[in-house]
Length: 432
Image 1 (cartoon, rainbow, N blue to C red):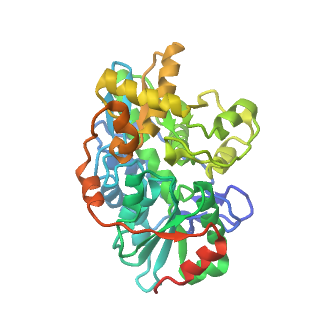
Image 2 (image 1 turned 30 degrees about the vertical axis):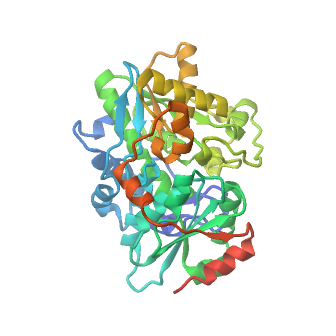
């Protein structure tokens, strides 16, 4: 299996090279040269999440040094559940927040760390994992690589535009993890990371790689929980499962799209965004118009120029090519807050603002007559957003033990200007 750049100006590479590089040399994102096909019958009825992950990823790793190690890698990465929680007969919540940092990004971050750790030569220089975060990615990547020999992590996050508990998580690791709070928005952080990754001299000096969803090692593993939940629903109800997915940078949602194209029993996919409406606007008009990001209650989705739009365009070059089973809708802060309050009042269930965007869009679909089995994707635990959720539900949200332990540690993040020269100098000054 070879991988190409979405921009078409870089040579094809194998997945081992693509995982280590993060970004193609022409600035594009790596995509598979062909999309392999699987069938629900290829999966045993009693397979756990890790086994489903290994099976669905196996053809993507054809020819890789890692292919035979996929079961062990997946056992390490998917060591906690992705629970499909029934809310009523046809409505489900896919809970992806049971990992160490209480967000869906724990699965793929741990997969990438386990993979890069196995690909790394013992005599190689220390690799610098550079990552931009709108809130959850940075903590997941930091936790996955924390104290992992041969790696250091540099996390860039927008100062003042993540929740207080997210900010504390990002600065709580120390050791080989460096948190930088950037005077800008997430899109600025993302632009800095992309520029660094195509700076050939800096890449060589710092052995740079990426752990954002631009990386294949983050994108592909996210298929696993869609595969597992869709297979479970198909066995119980003999019908595909439809998904409403909160999305900002578009990586997680496109993993669900890829799982559908591979052949898993997945029906319609709806992208739920916040007031950053660039994706719904594109679906409506066919015009892609990146914009400065707007700060919202669902801050991890505050993205005005989603990196993974390049992968969407690779799959479907124009709006006319978009399939009927893929749609997008936007939710403003008023509706996010109302959904959090209503979900607590009606179900005694505390949900984070991102999950609320999915539940709000699903409620709109139900109001229009959608009766099929649907899952809203719960991407983070409500306790990470206590300052938003608790006033709306009128009581404290219980903090998961792993998150509580992280919040009990001291935290520090270094301020840095929204300036590439400043970032470059900081990276070059990292200890060897």
